[in-house]
Amino acid sequence: MDEETRLIRTGASWPLPAKTVNPPIQRGSTVLMPSAASLYDDDQISYGITGLASPGALQAALAVLEGATNVTLYPSGLAAITGALLAVLKAGDEILVVDSAYRPTRRFCDQVLARFGVATTYYDPALSPDDLMALTNARTRLILLEAPGSLTFEMQDVPAIAAAAKARGILTLIDNTWAAGLYFKPLAHGVTISIQALTKYVGGHSDCFMGSVATLDAAIGKQLDDAMWDIGWSVSPDDAYTMLRGLRTMATRLPRHHENGLTIARWLQERPEVARVLHPALPDDPGYALWERDFTGACGLFGVVLKPAREKAVHAFLDALQLFGLGFSWGGYESLAIHCDPQLNSRTFPVDLEGPLLRLHIGLETPADLIIDLERGFAALNSQA
Ligand SMILES: Cc1ncc(COP(=O)(O)O)c(C=O)c1O
Image (cartoon, rainbow, N blue to C red):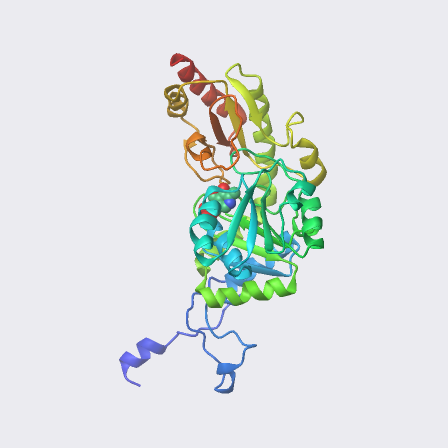
């Protein structure tokens, strides 16, 4: 062979020389098939969109975490939510979506599902399972839950809703990102589809996007697998490797987020500037009984309702923070803060809060240092009072 050909082909299919702790990052769009007869054999992996080493290993590990038989991967948490909805819904269906769902979930329902003839009704997270079922009709195909809810952290009776929906042939889908698949097990509580933004605690280092959809229902699992091909979702092997690395330490990191979060939440409850802390693992939270019954822990994300304060004072609080970053995501090792009021006006049911709402993500830093930072914030807030 000519040198050019030899340079192009030599070493291209080098066999794995040694066994390492982690799966290889096997990059590939093209998959080389063993024979002509295998080219159209549906049982063979024929394209890099499925079946490569690191995404496959991640799917297997997430199946253990979720107690699932089928796990599909998406390029972001939001893509997992939208991908699952597209996989199981059809024109003419109606869905019920909790009013405290992650805001982009709501945008997808209003702007995309509506165009394809799927109607969304938002429901108050405080509704009892019976009152929620009273909103269903023959066209209701799915109920979308999130507990605790985004920004306002309301709990829901997920097992009761899942059981009542199942009895009516209605699917349930939960965004379980807050519990990270570890502190609440939706599938074991009867939910059909469990979704996570792996971007948060599974990744754990604020450096990678991905989402997962898990189910125990074989028919739904097939619809989700088919949609991977029909819609063309795929994740990069490098990102799958990063997620897998995060997953290995998640069960070690999360208890620290739980402890640090509660330490800061209890400290905030004593502050004169604070009206209420929205954290379902605090015994005086309205969601505490459900959290204690169904969850085995809490992550580091919760809300803080301030006593009435001007926007300028809230901005002064946030701008004075030096350890807390101002950022929208969460689930990494670092502490973050945002103010939430501009997001609450998209809700259908008015949120009744005493004053401005902040959301804090408590990271793995030493709580005493975070408290000094928050004291700096309160000093700035009070200087604007
Ligand atoms: C509750 C919840 N679900 C889903 C997502 C979406 O995740 P991603 O940013 O990976 O799309 C987020 C992101 O903030 C979230 O807070």
